[in-house]
Image (cartoon, rainbow, N blue to C red; front, side, top):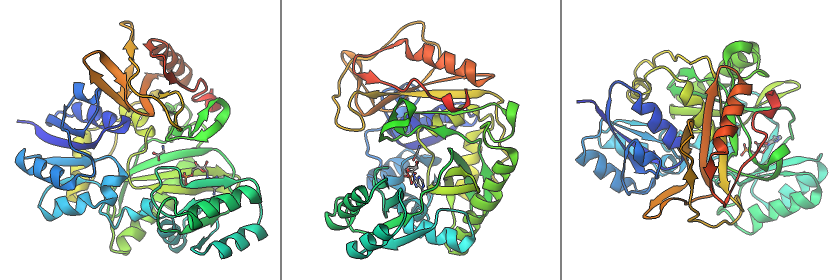
Length: 424
Ligand code: AMP
Ligand code: GLY
C-alpha cells in the first residue's frame, strides 16, 4: 500500500504539488481539499475549505492520511499545522507563529534587521498623521505596505505624494483590511526573481529560481495580479535557473538571505518547517529581499516543480518529521508557464465560460480556477489555468507554450504574450 496524502488548497500551485506527488513511487492515493476540475483528474477532491481545520483534521484521521501538505497561507495563518501536530498527525507547513514571516511585514522586517539580511530601509507606523508626515518629507517613489495578509493587494508603490496619501488613508483610516499598521520602505530597482527553499529548522534546501510576472498586461503594464506567468531556465548559463542571476548571486541569496532567516527563526523559538519563499531583487548594490512568503509561490511552483526529479514525498516527509531533507535533483530544462485569466481580472469578472482544449494540445495544464459541469469544463475564478511547457532552451519552451495556449478555446480568457521576454 502506498502512502496516502492530503493536499490542502485548490489552485494551480496545488495542482502542481499533486502532479509532483503523483510521480513519487511511494505515494498510493492523493486527496485534495477542495481541489479543482484539473486536480480531480489526478486526485480525489474533497469538498472542504482550506481553512476548515476541524473538517480537514477529521478527514485526515478518518482516512488514515500519512501526510498532509498545505498550499495556501490562509490555512497556515489559521493554525492548521499546530492543530494537526497536537493531534499527532504528520503535516508539511509552518506553524502559525512561523507564518508571521509572511503574515506580518513588520515581523519580517525586524527579523531581517536582526539577522543582517539585506532589504529596503523601512519604518513602521500605526498613526496616520505620523506616517503621512514621514512620507511627505521623504523621496518618491516610495513603497507603502499594509502589515498583514491582504491577498497580494496590500502593497502600493506611490509615485507621487497624492498616491501615497490615498494609500495611507486606505490602510490606516478607512480600515479596509482590518487593524491598521503600515511599513514604509525605500524604493529599490532591478529585476525581481523568486527563490524558494524547503526549510526544516536550520536546514535549507534551495530550489531553482524562477521569475513571476505580476502585472496584468504586456510590458508590465496594468494592475498587480497574483501572477500572470513564470519561467525557470536550464543550467546552460549557471546553477540558479535564471540567466540574469549568476552563481555568486544565487549563493549569496542562499547563504546570506535564506540561511540566516532560517537560523533567526529557529533562534526565536519559531523554527520553519515548510517552504520559505524569497521575493528578491537584484539591485545595483546586490540581491535584496522584497518580501517573504511562508509557502510555495503561485505561479512559480507550476514551473519549478516540473523540474524536480527527486521524490517530493520524501522531501515533504523529512521536513514534516524534522529529519534530514534529501538533496534535490533538477532536470536541466527550461520551463515556461502562461496564465490564462478571466477578462476583467484582477477586477470583477464573469464565471461559467466554457473552455475547450483542442485534441492536438500536448503540454501540461495546471488548473487554477475551473469547474466541471454537465456542459463540460467552465471558468470558475480570476486566474483560470496555466499552460506549462518545457524544452532544453527557453526559446523553444516559449514557442511550445504559446502553441499550447492557442489550442485553448474560451471567449472570456486573456493572457500575456511576453512571458520570459526579459531573457529571450
Ligand atoms: P510584495 O507583495 O511585497 O512582493 O510587493 C509587490 C510588488 O511591489 C513587488 O513585486 C515589487 O514589484 C513592488 N515592491 C515591493 N517593495 C518594493 C520596494 N521596496 N522597492 C521597489 N518595489 C517594491
Ligand atoms: N507569485 C507570488 C506569490 O506567490 O506570492
